[in-house]
Image 1: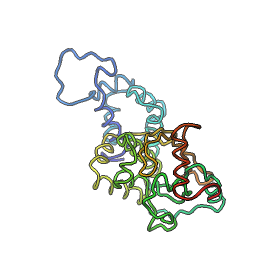
Image 2: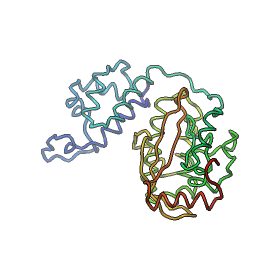
Image 3: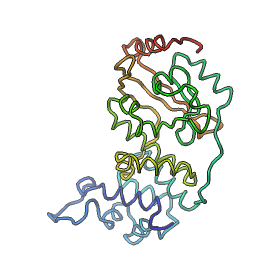
Image 4: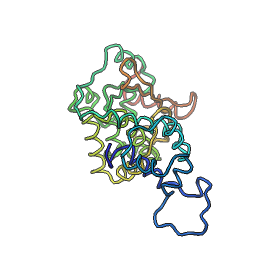
Length: 288
């Protein structure tokens, strides 16, 4: 682990985001030269020596125990996903492998059949880097009707949902609270890169987004962490207007790096009626 290690960077950034007031430490009226807690203050809260904590931040220690990591997570007021992220970073740092390009991804015939059968529910399958591997007609019409329906069929034309959120004007306009969607995408990418630090294509995606989107670069630097599980979004669709949707993400066994994403609306609500109108406007219905 070197000074630029993911674990050390995460600790430094999160420590800088905490103030003495956040953790109940007195200020004594002093003016601080740098934002956030001092290393010795964080170490005191975690119950470890300042020297040991400094070595962790600087990448000079490789043997942090689960108990120490939990103590640091508690001192930093980390959420449960952030705490898990801290442990994953520590493990990934000690078992780092050279970057590699993973093989192409595909979707099983059974999963494609399931997508088609879910004709009333917008749904799509995402790969290990948030590439769209497949979608049904409803999912395509709701989230990316401006793209070709067959675009996920070939690796060279597959849409990437992270890229769409930050670099595609249609997708940006779709989410009325775009900053919330952007933060969720970045948080999920942080989780993905921690679990797969040797994925060269995933690293390239992060680099591309950081170069072409100042908003992504800012959020990435904040070390936002949070897996996509269940989120509610207000969207404005170019065909059916405003609606509120619930997006849920489910891992697909046995390939747990694939996920099934579904979109629903409150039964009987105007948003549910809008989804029905969208299916009718696009000329497809049950079983399509």
